[in-house]
Length: 261
Image (cartoon, rainbow, N blue to C red):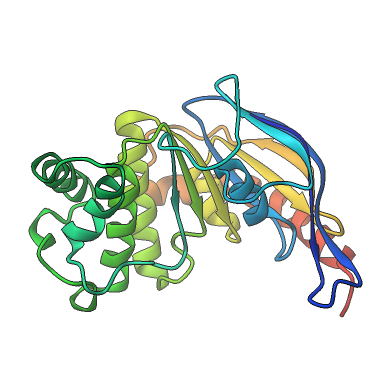
């Protein structure tokens, strides 16, 4: 279980004369094996909270506890997938997947085997020797996902991983992610701006409001699983459309409440 206990966080201005309150007194729990999405307007603190959960940012106030242990920094059981591909251009796809394993001190033979399995999981087993410049955007993002999966995490933290992809590839990646998730049911925390993406992927959606960042709605998504065999039927179902419409109303309310620069 992930426990978020009274998290607040503020960023100082460049001149140090003011602060931006990104999050204020956010508390929640995320059960193991669930797929949870953070949804809300830009600047509402979704990514900040995700990075705090991963241990990349120390919050101004509050604590994160995972499996009964306080989070004080990154750990191998948590892996992050970013919107940017963040691949090392001088390494092959396999080399990029091996990189964190190499940092952890894993031997060459073992890490190559792990990388090959991870690439096969994301459908890139034939592209291990390709360099990033030889791969499409969707394939680069799959390498990023394989790199995260290769570390064997219990918790997969994903920060708008498909945001830079074109709509067709984005939908394909959503389906591939669902296949991977159905196979082992890792705990996934997923940041997105897309209402449709959040509804399709999630067991639960946490809607963030801004000024300051806080949770304004906690929604359970009761759609059948698996969602990969007939995704079009799910996305055109009355239940899916109702969820989408209800969430859009909440999102528009928050957007109207945002201060105008």
